[in-house]
Length: 288
Image 1 (spheres, rainbow, N blue to C red):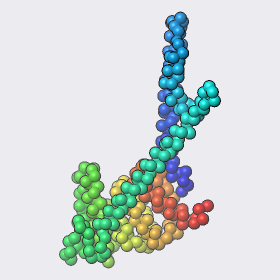
Image 2 (image 1 turned 90 degrees about the horizontal axis):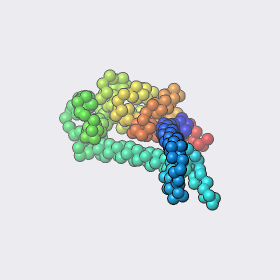
Image 3 (image 1 turned 30 degrees about the horizontal axis):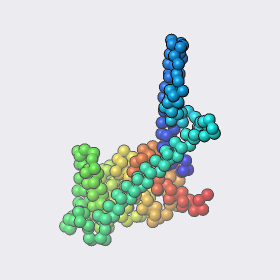
Image 4 (image 1 turned 120 degrees about the vertical axis):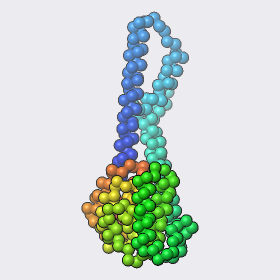
């Protein structure tokens, strides 16, 4: 996907904002001019001194940048408006993107911290039931049920998100320990918690043999932002192991279309841009 297409969402928003501001300012200036003409007709003898003219000019000049690229004042001073405004907007967008990338890295690091310690040692706060059932499907099913209950009953809040991330970390631990975990069946499950378990498994133990099914499941999971976010991470992990060349062309096209539909400032958009950038680099190592 071209870089311009990736930035199409923010660029369209900026352009719409500029157009709205330009329309409003043009309307205000036109109304002010009509009002001045009416005042002149009603009171033709009214005199406006030089100080008043200068103050009115100072008041209007900052707004003219929405209508003109630049204004040249007497004496050769040239004021560049639009270029400066575009630079400020671009800097703000870069700053926001950097913040989203840092937040995504922070969430990934928290998952890694919770699940560190190898196959048999869980970090503090992780799922630590060491009974036989905890190493089988029972643990996964309990976590999947808790996840479904949270989504259904708990109001959206940072606390709910934190708990959901903890569940994902626990699913990473539980599925990683289960050698006979049915990845294919889990990806095809109607239960979002079971699909999340499949993403957790492939995130922890990437397997290129499931790349096509994983990608399709993640694309179909668009209605559940949390699922799709970690699904994109799972695809990243699998592609990192199996290689981007394993990605189907139609799936890449669907991921590009998905990016256009996502809010540009969302976590999903940030991680999907990383995924697509990696695929492009693999397809064109020379960067042509």
